[in-house]
Image (tube, rainbow over all chains, first blue to last red; front, side, top):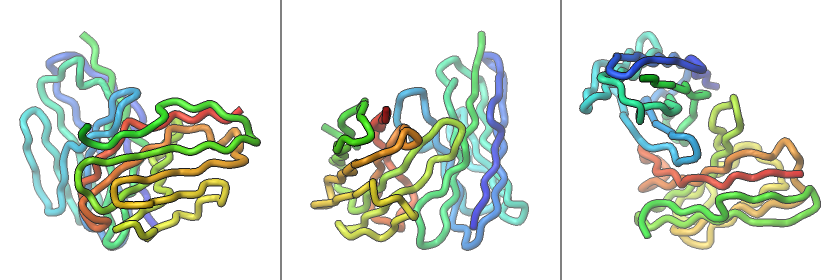
Amino acid sequence: GQNIDQPTEMTATEGAIVQINCTYQTSGFNGLFWYQQHAGEAPTFLSYNVLDGLEEKGRFSSFLSRSKGYSYLLLKELQMKDSASYLCAVKQAGTALIFGKGTTLSVSS
Amino acid sequence: ETGVTQTPRHLVMGMTNKKSLKCEQHLGHNAMYWYKQSAKKPLELMFVYNFKEQTENNSVPSRFSPECPNSSHLFLHLHTLQPEDSALYLCASSQESGANVLTFGAGSRLTVL
């Protein structure tokens, strides 16, 4: 089986940095994904990590430690439009993505 | 049209009704998925189709019946649903079922009275 944990809610202010953590327990690990979902919209792909380390993509970075079953999504220079749910998802070999409950991030001015 | 399109965006139905959700993708992908998204719960995988063949059924009750006539279209037929089936139903597609990145539609918000 698999278990994916992430905080339910987080708040931050514009211009700040926020780190959203995700821990997972799974067999046959084949990569970790982060998706962003604005209210009423489709989830959109943000990042993919399969090797340990940090992947940077503009204001967003994602980190993975396979030995610790741990990932985080780092958002820098927060903007109001970053208010959304952030979904951590794990890929096991031979199956579709399994998602966590998501973290709702609220960015205030 | 581009991406993944779902219709209807909103649906209200009684427990004795029969309705269908439709998903269409214009990405040339070969795999399509149905996920259920309920409040405070993770996205739940329901069904996976790869090259029109069902490859995963995640123990979904038979009152949900998927249909994949071709690689571009996916339906979810609904009948005798329960109020607890009220949720956002998301369709997604990928290059093939082993591929990593899913492209999601905006979802169909279903309310069962």
